[in-house]
Length: 250
Image 1 (cartoon, rainbow, N blue to C red):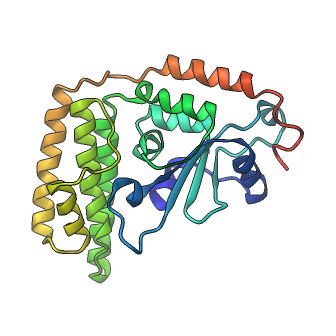
Image 2 (image 1 turned 90 degrees about the vertical axis):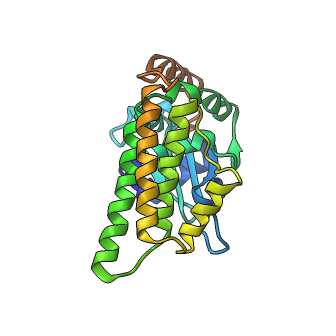
């Protein structure tokens, strides 16, 4: 859960956070390889979600956590304000929650949040998707140099990030699931260790060039619609006022 965890900031104490997730989740999806269509029989089931802490919880000295790990394995949830900030900054892990085809829980507010997805998209994706892919490349290289071990899932995901980012910049749409076809089969071949490092690096360089070209003619705006997102967030605070029942931080 390293990449997702680093996106979310400090996670809350389990007794507090798990109660917030149980009672105040707006949206919960399956993310990661299963959402991408790249899972194997041994793949984890990654869950990502968004909860709205009751406004009363912010009036106390002890504030609600902005992210919570659990209670299920490989589950991470963000408080709605933190989540919105991550999406406005084009964080790939957070944006995936708004576009995953595998939705497990969605309240009316969660439905509104998913409908708001286009407001979060901008050309900032060029920087963030490329940067996240580079981190995956650095991790794979460091592990290989340290002990010769290769976790082929890492190069697969860096290529997937670049491919997803390029399509987003080209079309203005974030497609989480890799469509059946040559690209998906080649990504799965990378995961199985069937491509050489030279072939992987060549594909990476071509995707980086595609990302550069896509930025030049992207239909995405230079900046996200922060005002629209903020208006919605304020409305959420108004509409969830009084839902605490004295339990938010128990």
